[in-house]
Length: 454
Image: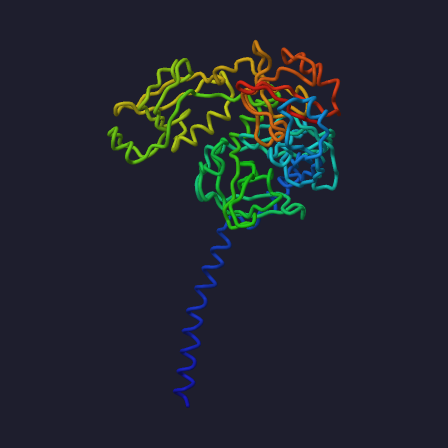
């Protein structure tokens, strides 16, 4: 009996010896932890993250009936349109971030506010404020709004996103599914992500912080409460979160916003090269001992790159001392900078590292092109006066004009039955038909046609 009690006592003592260190270590971990809660940081940040509600009309196309009167068809000639476009009202929700409280600047995604006629911003204190669009850029998915009332606003300072590292802790704040302000946390999973849309300028921050529908335009912040990115996209079935979210880096946002504030638009710069990713085969062929960079296969004549002395076969390894890993990253960085900016490119040529200064320029052939809003129906177009009319040098694919049928390189030669020679005449005639159906007379290659728009 005594042996049983003694054995039991030793067993209890051994258990206690095993348990006590565990509690002791836990106590040390809690005591040494610097971040007990994100609440203090969030109290300063969340008032600057807003919900955005938009209302507008979208264009939908439908087939015209076969029984159109012949005299109406005759009025337009053989190019009478086979489809008709109708407007359908819509409403949508998203998020935004106040980056300048004094001036009421709110940054969000372009896709949150596109086609919007009315924009309302809801603050976390319950106030609702009307906002106007200052400018946007579809290719980088950024838009800048300005609030009508700037009283008692908060703002989030922008961090230097070039200093981010994979593994940094981040917090995403937004308005998912219209539920209201929601906070999620995670880490930076990757940097410089691209390929979601090959036509756009992408160098995303990838994070596993939960980002869902409605989070678009919201804030991605570091643990110091600084803005490191604008949440913009997710990859997942049916739009749900699977731990793969993307944000536009704050440095890109800053470059774009500064241009919109100064010019009312993004004055996109080009380097003037054609290139590709640096593959292992390319590196081997050119005997380059590197696994990162943007390979130059062609330098366009009379371009910024040509004037700076860049050559085919060069590998761009850095931009202003920032490492360049891929051609897509280089394209995104250049494409979100303004024209006339001088940059320093680190290049690898014939085994030697060189630094080359380049002054960025606009795309050649469209020096006088403007994206100024001539009329709402032509939003998203870039027009240029030429001898034979007005050339459409660029048009966004989700614009009303594109959905009505206007295309890049079309030449506008008339409106209804009035001949149009330049943008000034077009603006004057459009002002007479603000809410009317118009017939835009277009020259396309060797044919002319009418495009019906409203």
